[in-house]
Length: 421
Image (cartoon, rainbow, N blue to C red):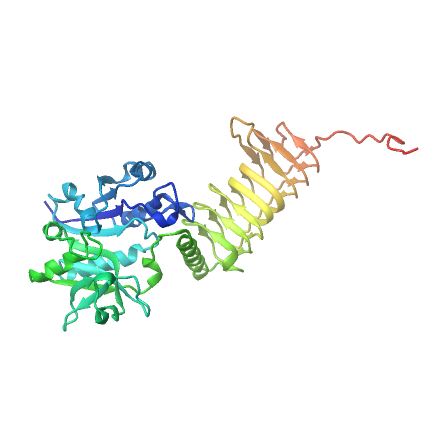
Protein backbone atom coordinates (compact mmCIF):
# COMPACT_ATOMS: atom_id res chain seq x y z
CA UNK A 1 0.00 0.00 0.00
CA UNK A 2 1.24 3.51 -0.84
CA UNK A 3 2.18 5.85 1.97
CA UNK A 4 -0.69 7.80 3.47
CA UNK A 5 -1.19 10.80 5.72
CA UNK A 6 -3.69 10.19 8.52
CA UNK A 7 -4.96 12.45 11.30
CA UNK A 8 -5.80 11.28 14.81
CA UNK A 9 -7.76 13.75 16.95
CA UNK A 10 -7.88 13.24 20.72
CA UNK A 11 -11.34 14.17 21.99
CA UNK A 12 -12.03 11.81 24.89
CA UNK A 13 -11.40 14.00 27.95
CA UNK A 14 -13.91 15.33 30.46
CA UNK A 15 -12.84 18.94 30.74
CA UNK A 16 -13.85 19.24 34.39
CA UNK A 17 -12.69 22.86 34.63
CA UNK A 18 -15.36 23.88 32.10
CA UNK A 19 -18.00 23.11 34.77
CA UNK A 20 -20.26 21.66 32.09
CA UNK A 21 -22.68 18.82 31.49
CA UNK A 22 -21.39 18.48 27.93
CA UNK A 23 -18.23 17.16 26.36
CA UNK A 24 -15.70 19.99 26.39
CA UNK A 25 -14.97 19.66 22.69
CA UNK A 26 -18.57 20.26 21.62
CA UNK A 27 -18.58 23.74 23.13
CA UNK A 28 -18.57 26.35 20.41
CA UNK A 29 -15.97 28.96 19.62
CA UNK A 30 -17.27 31.66 17.32
CA UNK A 31 -20.26 29.60 16.25
CA UNK A 32 -18.51 26.27 15.63
CA UNK A 33 -17.69 23.34 17.92
CA UNK A 34 -14.07 23.04 19.02
CA UNK A 35 -13.65 19.53 17.65
CA UNK A 36 -15.36 20.43 14.38
CA UNK A 37 -12.82 23.20 13.83
CA UNK A 38 -9.99 20.71 14.36
CA UNK A 39 -11.55 18.23 11.92
CA UNK A 40 -12.01 20.95 9.30
CA UNK A 41 -8.36 21.96 9.69
CA UNK A 42 -7.32 18.34 9.09
CA UNK A 43 -9.58 18.19 6.04
CA UNK A 44 -7.77 21.17 4.54
CA UNK A 45 -4.63 19.02 4.53
CA UNK A 46 -6.35 16.47 2.28
CA UNK A 47 -5.47 13.67 4.68
CA UNK A 48 -6.44 10.15 3.69
CA UNK A 49 -8.27 9.41 6.92
CA UNK A 50 -9.37 11.13 10.14
CA UNK A 51 -9.80 9.12 13.33
CA UNK A 52 -11.33 10.82 16.35
CA UNK A 53 -10.68 9.23 19.75
CA UNK A 54 -13.80 9.70 21.87
CA UNK A 55 -14.67 8.77 25.43
CA UNK A 56 -16.60 10.99 27.84
CA UNK A 57 -19.99 11.95 26.34
CA UNK A 58 -18.88 10.34 23.09
CA UNK A 59 -22.40 10.45 21.66
CA UNK A 60 -22.27 14.26 21.72
CA UNK A 61 -19.04 14.33 19.73
CA UNK A 62 -20.44 11.82 17.26
CA UNK A 63 -23.59 13.91 16.86
CA UNK A 64 -21.44 16.90 15.87
CA UNK A 65 -19.06 15.10 13.50
CA UNK A 66 -21.39 12.48 12.07
CA UNK A 67 -19.78 10.25 9.46
CA UNK A 68 -17.09 12.79 8.51
CA UNK A 69 -14.58 10.82 10.64
CA UNK A 70 -13.94 7.34 11.99
CA UNK A 71 -14.16 6.74 15.73
CA UNK A 72 -11.99 4.99 18.29
CA UNK A 73 -13.14 4.77 21.91
CA UNK A 74 -10.98 5.35 24.98
CA UNK A 75 -12.95 3.78 27.81
CA UNK A 76 -10.44 4.73 30.54
CA UNK A 77 -8.55 8.01 30.70
CA UNK A 78 -5.03 6.62 30.94
CA UNK A 79 -3.13 9.37 29.14
CA UNK A 80 -2.41 10.69 25.65
CA UNK A 81 -0.33 7.69 24.60
CA UNK A 82 -3.12 5.34 25.60
CA UNK A 83 -5.63 7.51 23.71
CA UNK A 84 -3.72 7.32 20.43
CA UNK A 85 -3.23 3.57 20.86
CA UNK A 86 -7.02 3.14 20.69
CA UNK A 87 -6.78 4.09 16.99
CA UNK A 88 -4.48 1.12 16.30
CA UNK A 89 -7.12 -0.83 14.39
CA UNK A 90 -7.24 1.94 11.78
CA UNK A 91 -3.47 2.45 11.66
CA UNK A 92 -1.97 -1.02 11.80
CA UNK A 93 -2.19 -1.69 8.06
CA UNK A 94 -1.05 1.77 6.98
CA UNK A 95 2.37 3.20 6.15
CA UNK A 96 3.20 6.88 6.02
CA UNK A 97 2.59 9.72 8.47
CA UNK A 98 0.07 10.32 11.22
CA UNK A 99 -0.68 13.79 12.57
CA UNK A 100 -1.75 13.87 16.22
CA UNK A 101 -4.09 16.74 17.12
CA UNK A 102 -6.14 17.72 20.17
CA UNK A 103 -9.85 18.41 19.97
CA UNK A 104 -9.54 21.33 22.40
CA UNK A 105 -6.86 23.21 20.40
CA UNK A 106 -9.18 24.75 17.80
CA UNK A 107 -7.35 27.61 16.04
CA UNK A 108 -4.24 25.88 14.73
CA UNK A 109 -3.70 26.86 11.09
CA UNK A 110 -3.59 24.27 8.34
CA UNK A 111 -0.50 26.04 6.96
CA UNK A 112 1.35 25.32 10.20
CA UNK A 113 0.51 21.63 10.04
CA UNK A 114 1.49 21.50 6.38
CA UNK A 115 4.95 22.78 7.28
CA UNK A 116 5.22 20.16 10.02
CA UNK A 117 4.36 17.34 7.60
CA UNK A 118 6.68 18.66 4.90
CA UNK A 119 9.62 18.87 7.30
CA UNK A 120 9.00 15.38 8.62
CA UNK A 121 8.95 13.95 5.09
CA UNK A 122 11.83 16.03 3.71
CA UNK A 123 14.15 15.40 6.67
CA UNK A 124 13.13 11.73 6.92
CA UNK A 125 12.18 12.09 10.58
CA UNK A 126 10.26 9.39 12.40
CA UNK A 127 8.82 11.95 14.79
CA UNK A 128 8.49 15.69 14.25
CA UNK A 129 7.17 17.82 17.09
CA UNK A 130 5.57 21.25 16.96
CA UNK A 131 7.19 23.45 19.61
CA UNK A 132 6.99 27.03 20.85
CA UNK A 133 9.12 29.35 22.94
CA UNK A 134 7.64 31.03 26.01
CA UNK A 135 9.31 33.41 28.43
CA UNK A 136 7.17 31.77 31.10
CA UNK A 137 6.84 28.08 30.15
CA UNK A 138 5.08 27.03 33.36
CA UNK A 139 2.69 24.13 32.85
CA UNK A 140 4.17 22.85 29.60
CA UNK A 141 6.39 19.89 28.80
CA UNK A 142 9.96 20.97 27.95
CA UNK A 143 11.87 20.08 24.80
CA UNK A 144 15.24 18.44 25.45
CA UNK A 145 17.67 18.75 22.53
CA UNK A 146 21.06 17.19 22.00
CA UNK A 147 24.24 19.07 21.07
CA UNK A 148 23.32 18.93 17.40
CA UNK A 149 19.89 20.45 18.02
CA UNK A 150 17.84 17.29 17.46
CA UNK A 151 14.98 16.54 19.83
CA UNK A 152 16.19 14.02 22.39
CA UNK A 153 13.11 13.80 24.61
CA UNK A 154 10.15 15.69 26.05
CA UNK A 155 9.81 15.93 29.81
CA UNK A 156 6.60 16.92 31.55
CA UNK A 157 6.93 19.75 34.04
CA UNK A 158 5.96 17.58 37.02
CA UNK A 159 8.76 15.19 36.13
CA UNK A 160 11.35 17.83 35.18
CA UNK A 161 14.49 18.80 37.11
CA UNK A 162 15.03 22.46 38.04
CA UNK A 163 17.46 22.79 35.10
CA UNK A 164 14.93 21.31 32.71
CA UNK A 165 12.19 23.62 33.99
CA UNK A 166 14.38 26.57 33.02
CA UNK A 167 14.12 25.55 29.34
CA UNK A 168 11.85 27.93 27.44
CA UNK A 169 11.08 25.71 24.44
CA UNK A 170 7.88 23.80 25.09
CA UNK A 171 5.89 20.97 23.59
CA UNK A 172 2.84 22.25 21.71
CA UNK A 173 1.18 18.82 21.81
CA UNK A 174 1.07 18.44 18.02
CA UNK A 175 3.06 15.69 16.33
CA UNK A 176 3.83 14.06 13.01
CA UNK A 177 4.91 10.42 13.40
CA UNK A 178 5.85 7.53 11.18
CA UNK A 179 2.78 5.34 11.59
CA UNK A 180 4.41 1.96 12.14
CA UNK A 181 7.19 3.23 14.42
CA UNK A 182 4.63 5.11 16.49
CA UNK A 183 2.59 1.96 17.03
CA UNK A 184 5.71 0.11 18.19
CA UNK A 185 6.64 2.92 20.57
CA UNK A 186 3.14 3.18 22.02
CA UNK A 187 3.33 -0.46 23.12
CA UNK A 188 6.55 0.28 24.97
CA UNK A 189 5.18 3.19 27.00
CA UNK A 190 5.32 2.91 30.79
CA UNK A 191 3.18 4.87 33.28
CA UNK A 192 6.23 5.61 35.45
CA UNK A 193 5.62 9.33 35.91
CA UNK A 194 3.98 11.71 38.37
CA UNK A 195 0.55 11.24 36.79
CA UNK A 196 0.76 7.47 36.40
CA UNK A 197 -0.28 7.82 32.74
CA UNK A 198 0.95 6.63 29.36
CA UNK A 199 2.47 9.81 27.90
CA UNK A 200 2.55 10.20 24.13
CA UNK A 201 5.68 12.42 24.32
CA UNK A 202 7.62 9.44 25.74
CA UNK A 203 7.43 7.94 22.23
CA UNK A 204 10.07 10.53 21.21
CA UNK A 205 12.55 9.17 23.75
CA UNK A 206 11.82 5.58 22.74
CA UNK A 207 12.50 6.38 19.09
CA UNK A 208 15.72 8.18 20.00
CA UNK A 209 16.87 5.16 21.99
CA UNK A 210 16.46 3.12 18.81
CA UNK A 211 18.53 5.60 16.82
CA UNK A 212 15.54 6.86 14.84
CA UNK A 213 15.77 10.46 13.69
CA UNK A 214 13.44 12.96 15.37
CA UNK A 215 13.04 16.71 14.99
CA UNK A 216 10.92 19.75 15.67
CA UNK A 217 9.57 22.88 14.09
CA UNK A 218 9.08 26.06 16.15
CA UNK A 219 5.73 27.72 15.60
CA UNK A 220 5.70 31.37 14.52
CA UNK A 221 2.46 32.42 16.23
CA UNK A 222 2.07 31.04 19.74
CA UNK A 223 -1.65 31.82 19.86
CA UNK A 224 -2.29 28.95 17.44
CA UNK A 225 -1.45 26.30 20.02
CA UNK A 226 -3.59 27.67 22.84
CA UNK A 227 -5.99 25.10 24.24
CA UNK A 228 -9.29 25.48 26.04
CA UNK A 229 -9.70 24.11 29.55
CA UNK A 230 -12.14 26.60 31.07
CA UNK A 231 -14.61 29.34 30.11
CA UNK A 232 -12.04 32.11 30.45
CA UNK A 233 -9.78 30.42 27.91
CA UNK A 234 -12.78 29.93 25.62
CA UNK A 235 -13.45 33.66 25.72
CA UNK A 236 -9.77 34.47 25.18
CA UNK A 237 -9.49 32.27 22.09
CA UNK A 238 -12.74 33.67 20.72
CA UNK A 239 -11.13 37.12 20.81
CA UNK A 240 -7.94 35.80 19.24
CA UNK A 241 -9.87 34.15 16.41
CA UNK A 242 -12.09 37.20 15.89
CA UNK A 243 -9.11 39.52 15.60
CA UNK A 244 -7.32 37.11 13.26
CA UNK A 245 -10.30 37.04 10.90
CA UNK A 246 -10.73 40.83 11.04
CA UNK A 247 -7.06 41.37 10.23
CA UNK A 248 -7.33 39.10 7.21
CA UNK A 249 -10.23 41.15 5.86
CA UNK A 250 -8.40 44.42 6.46
CA UNK A 251 -5.35 43.02 4.66
CA UNK A 252 -7.65 42.32 1.69
CA UNK A 253 -8.88 45.91 1.48
CA UNK A 254 -11.85 46.06 3.86
CA UNK A 255 -12.16 48.98 6.31
CA UNK A 256 -13.16 47.89 9.82
CA UNK A 257 -13.60 50.96 11.98
CA UNK A 258 -13.51 49.18 15.33
CA UNK A 259 -12.08 45.67 15.25
CA UNK A 260 -12.81 45.06 18.94
CA UNK A 261 -16.53 45.48 18.29
CA UNK A 262 -16.87 43.85 14.89
CA UNK A 263 -17.73 40.14 14.67
CA UNK A 264 -17.07 38.52 11.31
CA UNK A 265 -17.35 34.74 11.38
CA UNK A 266 -15.51 32.16 9.25
CA UNK A 267 -15.95 31.83 5.51
CA UNK A 268 -17.21 35.37 4.88
CA UNK A 269 -16.31 37.08 1.60
CA UNK A 270 -16.11 40.89 1.62
CA UNK A 271 -15.12 42.99 -1.39
CA UNK A 272 -12.59 45.82 -1.48
CA UNK A 273 -13.41 49.26 -0.12
CA UNK A 274 -16.39 48.02 1.86
CA UNK A 275 -16.67 49.77 5.23
CA UNK A 276 -17.79 47.88 8.33
CA UNK A 277 -19.01 50.14 11.14
CA UNK A 278 -18.87 49.13 14.84
CA UNK A 279 -21.14 46.60 16.55
CA UNK A 280 -21.72 44.67 13.36
CA UNK A 281 -22.06 40.88 13.24
CA UNK A 282 -21.62 38.99 9.96
CA UNK A 283 -22.26 35.25 10.12
CA UNK A 284 -20.55 32.43 8.23
CA UNK A 285 -21.18 32.06 4.50
CA UNK A 286 -22.17 35.68 3.86
CA UNK A 287 -20.92 37.31 0.65
CA UNK A 288 -20.60 41.10 0.46
CA UNK A 289 -19.50 42.99 -2.64
CA UNK A 290 -17.23 46.00 -3.11
CA UNK A 291 -17.89 49.56 -1.91
CA UNK A 292 -20.63 48.50 0.49
CA UNK A 293 -21.39 50.13 3.84
CA UNK A 294 -22.44 47.93 6.72
CA UNK A 295 -23.64 49.07 10.15
CA UNK A 296 -23.32 50.29 12.80
CA UNK A 297 -25.35 47.76 14.83
CA UNK A 298 -26.12 45.53 11.87
CA UNK A 299 -26.66 41.78 11.92
CA UNK A 300 -25.97 39.96 8.65
CA UNK A 301 -27.08 36.36 9.09
CA UNK A 302 -26.57 33.17 7.12
CA UNK A 303 -27.43 32.91 3.44
CA UNK A 304 -26.97 36.58 2.55
CA UNK A 305 -25.38 37.84 -0.67
CA UNK A 306 -24.88 41.56 -1.14
CA UNK A 307 -23.83 43.03 -4.49
CA UNK A 308 -21.58 46.08 -4.90
CA UNK A 309 -22.49 49.47 -3.42
CA UNK A 310 -25.10 48.08 -1.04
CA UNK A 311 -25.83 49.94 2.21
CA UNK A 312 -27.00 48.08 5.30
CA UNK A 313 -27.47 50.66 8.03
CA UNK A 314 -28.01 50.81 11.76
CA UNK A 315 -30.20 48.29 13.58
CA UNK A 316 -30.83 46.23 10.46
CA UNK A 317 -31.04 42.45 10.47
CA UNK A 318 -30.97 40.49 7.24
CA UNK A 319 -31.20 36.72 6.76
CA UNK A 320 -31.16 34.64 3.56
CA UNK A 321 -31.39 37.84 1.56
CA UNK A 322 -29.99 38.50 -1.90
CA UNK A 323 -29.61 42.24 -2.40
CA UNK A 324 -28.82 43.87 -5.73
CA UNK A 325 -26.28 46.54 -6.60
CA UNK A 326 -26.86 50.01 -5.21
CA UNK A 327 -29.77 49.02 -2.97
CA UNK A 328 -30.10 50.58 0.49
CA UNK A 329 -31.59 49.26 3.72
CA UNK A 330 -30.61 52.25 5.88
CA UNK A 331 -32.08 51.54 9.33
CA UNK A 332 -34.40 49.69 11.69
CA UNK A 333 -35.50 46.91 9.34
CA UNK A 334 -35.76 43.12 9.25
CA UNK A 335 -35.25 41.61 5.81
CA UNK A 336 -35.50 37.81 5.78
CA UNK A 337 -35.98 35.22 3.01
CA UNK A 338 -35.93 37.98 0.44
CA UNK A 339 -34.61 38.97 -2.98
CA UNK A 340 -34.23 42.68 -3.69
CA UNK A 341 -33.20 44.08 -7.06
CA UNK A 342 -30.90 46.97 -7.94
CA UNK A 343 -31.15 50.60 -6.78
CA UNK A 344 -34.08 49.95 -4.47
CA UNK A 345 -34.62 51.84 -1.21
CA UNK A 346 -36.07 50.12 1.83
CA UNK A 347 -37.57 52.58 4.30
CA UNK A 348 -37.11 52.71 8.04
CA UNK A 349 -39.04 50.06 9.96
CA UNK A 350 -39.72 47.76 7.01
CA UNK A 351 -40.31 44.12 7.89
CA UNK A 352 -40.62 41.06 5.68
CA UNK A 353 -43.14 38.91 7.49
CA UNK A 354 -41.57 35.64 6.36
CA UNK A 355 -42.82 33.22 9.02
CA UNK A 356 -46.45 32.30 9.64
CA UNK A 357 -45.73 30.05 12.60
CA UNK A 358 -45.30 26.97 10.43
CA UNK A 359 -43.49 27.85 7.20
CA UNK A 360 -40.96 30.37 5.89
CA UNK A 361 -42.01 32.20 2.72
CA UNK A 362 -40.22 34.50 0.31
CA UNK A 363 -40.51 38.17 -0.58
CA UNK A 364 -39.30 39.44 -3.96
CA UNK A 365 -38.78 43.17 -4.55
CA UNK A 366 -37.83 44.45 -7.99
CA UNK A 367 -35.39 47.05 -9.29
CA UNK A 368 -35.58 50.80 -8.65
CA UNK A 369 -38.45 50.50 -6.19
CA UNK A 370 -39.16 52.55 -3.10
CA UNK A 371 -40.56 51.01 0.07
CA UNK A 372 -41.80 53.63 2.52
CA UNK A 373 -41.31 53.62 6.27
CA UNK A 374 -43.09 51.18 8.58
CA UNK A 375 -44.14 48.76 5.84
CA UNK A 376 -45.00 45.11 6.43
CA UNK A 377 -44.47 42.79 3.48
CA UNK A 378 -46.42 39.61 4.22
CA UNK A 379 -44.77 36.74 2.35
CA UNK A 380 -45.17 35.14 -0.08
CA UNK A 381 -45.42 38.37 -2.02
CA UNK A 382 -43.78 39.91 -5.10
CA UNK A 383 -43.19 43.61 -5.67
CA UNK A 384 -42.49 44.57 -9.28
CA UNK A 385 -39.91 46.99 -10.73
CA UNK A 386 -40.35 50.74 -10.29
CA UNK A 387 -42.99 50.40 -7.60
CA UNK A 388 -43.75 52.74 -4.72
CA UNK A 389 -45.08 51.34 -1.46
CA UNK A 390 -46.71 53.97 0.71
CA UNK A 391 -45.53 54.35 4.31
CA UNK A 392 -47.46 52.40 6.90
CA UNK A 393 -48.79 49.83 4.43
CA UNK A 394 -49.25 46.14 5.09
CA UNK A 395 -48.81 44.45 1.72
CA UNK A 396 -50.46 41.04 1.38
CA UNK A 397 -50.86 40.84 -2.41
CA UNK A 398 -48.45 41.14 -5.32
CA UNK A 399 -47.82 44.63 -6.63
CA UNK A 400 -47.33 44.99 -10.41
CA UNK A 401 -44.49 47.05 -11.86
CA UNK A 402 -44.77 50.83 -12.10
CA UNK A 403 -47.50 50.93 -9.44
CA UNK A 404 -48.24 52.78 -6.20
CA UNK A 405 -49.49 50.47 -3.45
CA UNK A 406 -51.36 51.84 -0.45
CA UNK A 407 -52.61 49.34 2.14
CA UNK A 408 -53.68 51.22 5.23
CA UNK A 409 -57.00 52.26 6.73
CA UNK A 410 -58.20 55.77 5.91
CA UNK A 411 -57.73 58.14 8.86
CA UNK A 412 -60.82 58.81 10.91
CA UNK A 413 -60.96 61.63 13.48
CA UNK A 414 -63.69 61.51 16.16
CA UNK A 415 -63.75 64.98 17.56
CA UNK A 416 -64.32 65.32 21.27
CA UNK A 417 -63.94 61.58 21.87
CA UNK A 418 -61.23 62.05 24.51
CA UNK A 419 -62.45 65.31 25.95
CA UNK A 420 -62.39 65.45 29.78
CA UNK A 421 -65.29 67.14 31.64
